[in-house]
Length: 134
Image 1 (cartoon, rainbow, N blue to C red):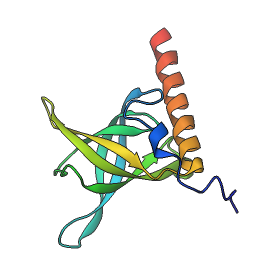
Image 2: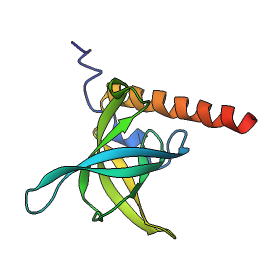
Image 3: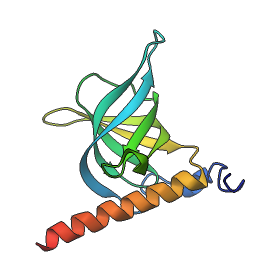
């Protein structure tokens, strides 16, 4: 059983748009969307960057509306148990040469989710740094 303080949402004011380290990625992830018709499905997308306050995702197919709320599943490694889920709201759409890029802001993060995000961002930053040295 988790610590009660750990399971409460983190303070939103401290999670400004660009708070914390932001790491650029190209990692396949999934999100869950309940559409207007009531149909629900996991949708593949690519995580392009992430921080403890939000992320940029690129859809493989389909579109999202600004204001839509999604459940984003982030797998930190190939081990499915090393992943976690966060609720996020689509806050912007930016066209790129190939696809549409969506900025999402994480919502109601618990202390545990915030720790998972910090760990994931640190891990991915270390991986990028070690690759750059070669």
